Amino acid sequence: MSTPHGLLKRYTAQMSPGTLRWIGLRPERRAELVIVDKTRALEGLGLEGDHRCLKTPGSGRQVTLICQEHIDAMAAILGREEIAPQLLRRNLVVSGINLLVLRHRRFRIGEAEFEGTAHCHPCSRMEETLGPGGFAAMFGHGGLCAKVVCGGELALGDSVELLS
Image (cartoon, rainbow, N blue to C red; front, side, top):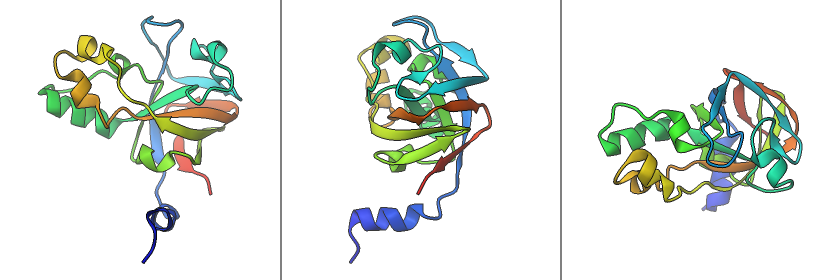
C-alpha cells in the first residue's frame, strides 16, 4: 500500500496546470487592494507594490493565493451570487489547480517561481468583510501562503504549474 505522500507524488506527476485569474496588491496594511493585470515577483521579498514585500523579507508569507473554485464555494455557503476577490485580501486568484497540492512544493506562475509554505487561514476581519458566517465559510478555503524563490513577471492568464 502506498503512503499518502507516495500517492500524492504519483497523482501530481500528471497534474494539469491552472491559470492566474486575478492579481491584487496591498500598498499598505488595511489599505484597499490595487487590482493589476501584471506584476513582478521579487526573489525573497514578495510582489512589487505589495506592503509585505518590504515588511517581511525571507518570510514564508510573501504572497497569498486562493482558488476561484473556493471563492465560489464560499459564496454558495454564504448565499451570495459571488464574492469579489479583493474582499478576501489575497494577492493571487488561480483556477483549475488544487493549491493544497502546492504546499511545501515549488511551482511557477509566469516567469516567477514560488514555494508553497503554509495554509492561509482566514482572519477575524472576514466577519466584517463578508458578514456573519464569513470566517466559517472561509475556513479550510483560505488558500496558500508562498515565498518567492526566483523572481520574474507574472500576468493574468499565465499558467500555474507544479515543478518537479
